[in-house]
Structures are given as C-alpha cells and as structure tokens.
Amino acid sequence: MKKLLIPILFFLGCTTTWSQAIVCSDADRQKFEEKVQQLQPLSQDDYGQTLVTIGKTFMGTPYVAKTLEVGNKESLVVNLHGLDCTTFVENVLAFGILKEQETQSFEDYTEALETIRYRDGELDG
Image (cartoon, rainbow, N blue to C red; front, side, top):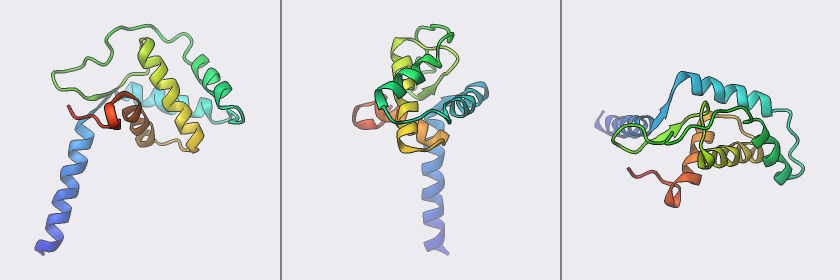
C-alpha cells in the first residue's frame, strides 16, 4: 500500500503545483479555444507567413500594459483579451509553435508560453 500511496501523493503534488502556476480566466480559456479553431485551416507551408497570419488574427485586441503583473507571486499569465508589445509577440510565437507541432491543446500552449517567457523555459517564481 505504501508503494502505491507515495507515487500518488507525488503526482498530486506535482499537478497541484503546476496548476497553481497558471493564471487564466474562463474568458481567456474560451478565447484560446476560439483562436485554435480560427487557426485550424491555416496552411503551414511558410512558417514566416504563418506567423504573420497569426499576428493579424490579433488585430483589434486592445493594448493593455502590465498584463503579466498579477498577484505577489510570479505565475504564468494567459491573457488573450489585452496584450502589450511583448505579450503580442509571445502569443504569436506560442500559436506558431502549436501549428508547427500540429497540436491544439491548452497544455501545449502554456508550455510554449513558458518556454518563450522564462530563462531555460522554466518559471521558478
């Protein structure tokens, strides 16, 4: 029983820590799903052109400063309703990575964002 309990507790601890490190509203999660559907028919022949096309899908998104400054502890913030210059580029690259890897999962998206934003691709607080 102990042999089974330890891995389960370790797994729960890891998933709890991981889920606490992401700040994302339901509206932003819905916006992610909409963006994935919008980009689904996009051809991937020219990666540079793909990034330009992805960038154009953000036209009309309001400019909002300091969108990553949420709470006292640094978290991976997902905000698709307002972007600054940096978060615009990060999101275009993250969606470009999803297209290149032919995936549509939110987990892969947040992993791409973390890789782009943080040294060695790891948020450490």
